[in-house]
Length: 256
Image (cartoon, one colour):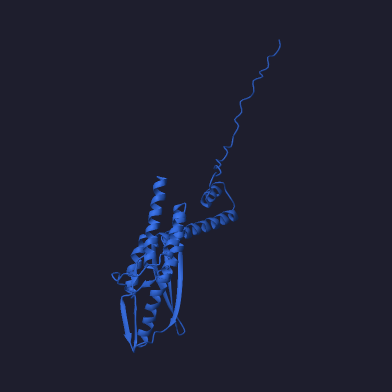
């Protein structure tokens, strides 16, 4: 009698190791934060993680800088008018200037609407008083403007008053410089008759009208307002500002 051999395979328990889930590589436009997250999820070594963290930091700093520039351009679309509000007279000298309170009250509110804050650092370096205005945007980017001067010994100030006067003076002008603004004499707009020179306004308005995008309009505005403020041309300022507003409205309407 022939033996019947059982050819069925033996049942053996085989231990299997489940493969670790691998994160999908980011695709399309990739920010450094995406690369860092992908590297962490896939066990990248420390050197690579450090390089990616440095890349992420540079990326965030660049984004903050761009946000600062854009917000400053928006602020300058409607900059405050700072009028010289104080008359100073002593020893045959007579002049007007904008007080620190007038400068800050006019500027700070407008800056805050666009995410800016400011502060001053003050120090003495020998006979010089040094003041730095730090202008910071909500995204984190800061820019610094520094001026220095000797103590203000004009008039009959004592030593402390001389230092305080120099600090106040430097605070005014560092804030003005940091924002690109200037003070203006009070002008009687009722006196009239003089023929206006419109060439400055016409030049910049033509450039605004030729700007194809809202970003281009803002670039023209940022350049033009510096030239117009330097010329202290109030008529050109008003016409230029109105042209910029109209062009932005037209671009927004076309995109809607």
